[in-house]
Length: 438
Image 1: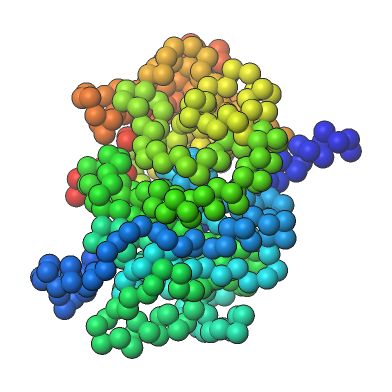
Image 2: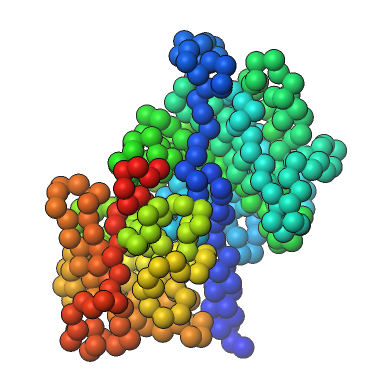
């Protein structure tokens, strides 16, 4: 095998592992309540719980110098996947959080980045599907009792919530909440809350934790419900103090520089905080299959083609993606198709979705025309080039009522000579088909 073949194989393996983690909160659209049962009707009582001034995030959630060190970096899994990221089929809509990964053999501690309030309802432990369900079981790690695969929501203010998913939580944190007469505890910035460690039962060759921010002052305009979790996610980077921002960027720079030399990474800018790539009347952005009533419902979440996303080349990180762009002349953008579960309802084409594809506009415009898609993993067998006829229609200046009609064909000639048939698939912009859906 020559050097070029080895490089291609390594790139393939790396991209196959560039995946995110699903989580039950997103599938159900549930967020922690802003109040507990005893004071839900007393707004002033809730305000009094936040008896400190919110000043932003003054502590890093992990030691980024340690996370980005050679001993911690994984061969095929990134140390930090950014907020602005549309390259994960299991989160086609964009995860809107950071993924922090490590292959370190030493413990990597997780810290609370801001003074915050933790309620009993803010700790969620889910059944371990690998071991058959042993939620809440304590195990020992690094001299501490721990709980694996936890979602934890820390309220930094009335508006700002910091969350971790797939966190290995210190059991003493949970116990302190349960033992509190108030039903919550207040933790200082910098408090050691757990570890970046995936459960041993999953037998993963890397460890990962999700880290994100929900801010009620933010509205991405992606749904008709301005408090929907998808609308209020924000880039964690924007919430750190200038000192912490500088330390994160300094730790990330050697990793970023390496990706820039390799030129095969489309989403690498941790400072990019864009919330919404949907373009009115154009194909770019996120689409939900219209025969599903709720694209975020747990039964259909990330099923084949339930969500698709088109990102144009202008929105990709060219400094770290230059090599792929040079090798794929005429690339118009990237298409990501959900492919976690078997299709529910109509299929876009026979077989399974590519997951990640290069998208090439052949004729027409960004609103209607013919396009070609080629599997991003061009070396994989059985994934052929397909041709799409597409049409975007809308009735207002808002993207929310846009409809995308897509039909896939096996040849360019067939796509050119055919009108839309009963095999065409409709997609809408919003996750919910009706306003009653959340």
